[in-house]
Amino acid sequence: MKYIFIILILINFCRAADSSFFDSVDNNQDKKNDEIKKKKKSLLEFMHNINPSDAAYSGAILDRYKKIENETLSLSILNKPLTKRIKDINTIYIHPHYINNIYFPKYFEMKKTPLFSFKTHSQRTIITPNTISFKVPPNFVNGNIVVYGFDTKEEKNYFFTINVEKISYTKLLYDEYLKRYLVDGNYFSNMNKFYFHEDYDAYTILNNYLKINNITHEIDLSKIFKKNGSYDLIITPKNEILYIIRDKDNYDIEFRNVKFKITPEYSISKASKRVNYEK
Image (cartoon, rainbow, N blue to C red; front, side, top):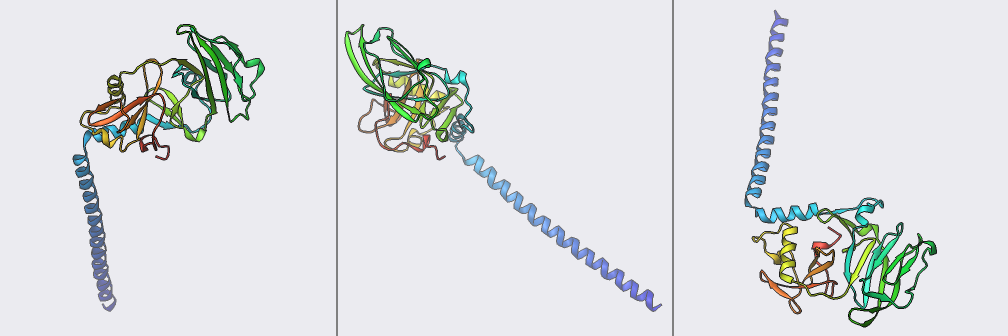
């Protein structure tokens, strides 16, 4: 009888322990559920309060530019022609594995053999009155080409330099929208076509830029081009690279309360975070 009494006491004790244990588990689970509900509520409030146009713009920019993870590039993309305006000093970026081509207008003739500051493969260097094709050795870093020519259309002599830079893989990006590579903020190609000065329609260029980047009228452009000197790049239908630069002192157009300069080269202060590689 004595033992039966002790067993009954132990059974009741275990039941009480089990009950308190499960109550404790239930309380902990309730706390976790409350925390989850609070997080969900905060997330929903954030999603409801965020400006949808700002969110769309941020997503478009993140999706557009991708970092290149290796040195293997698509030749079909590299061979897309890139158009540049002829200036006193010009710059092209090259991939050392491939033959690089420079084309001048059909009415332009080189009167002297261009001067190279670097060695090229003689069997892979071809020069005609208005083209230069060359391949650099693997250890190439940079150099320049000096060109002497004559514009038969305008009957004008030209003397200019083309700086040649090997691409830096650490600063290499891919533009998903335009299907092109960029290096250090510049689009590049194996096919560089040069032409003489033409005027730009700044209003049309800016409208095309907004369309390409999915920037709606609700988005304040001063939040994208945050300060004087902030810039971005666009390629025209003629495959020419143009800089869109916020410039309050030397501007071509005031567009949606922001003053912009449209130019084939960057010529002002520090670049914006918009094209900064340390994203």
